[in-house]
Length: 194
Image 1 (cartoon, rainbow, N blue to C red):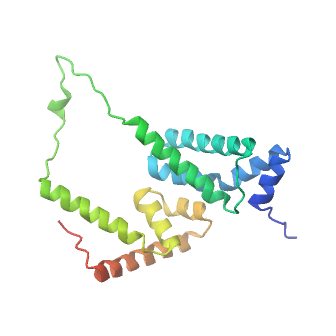
Image 2: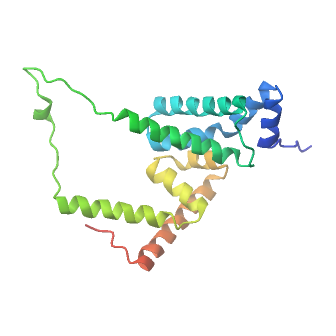
């Protein structure tokens, strides 16, 4: 017997009508995707957990204030909230580790910073910009897998879970993303070496 899947819009309607369990179902439905996205960008599990909680607190507050506009795009709206919270965090943080020097220990005696020429740094930055621009031309599914894998350091198993596909499908999407990127590099005549 097939069970009917309740839409996000219906769960929101039920929550607004006073059924708290509807919100729990809604969060559970999307938590893996939202958390994976946040973690992919911040690369810190504790910070990702904090931002995930902040995201859904903002969702709840928007629901309660009556400001939520139903447009049938709940998950996109939640992802936009998460994205904005990540940007806000990095704007505020400006995290620079502070290490105190002692008379018997100077951190700069231990750290060797490789110095690239200004030209090498500029060329490398341009290559990264070009590749990111080319990624935008990929089909949505291929772009998503490529970003999760290379920028988020996610395993194909995790990617498969987050995107609700088999591991083979995730691997296939990655393969096609790389094939298409190679074609785009040739088409757009992008030089990818320093």
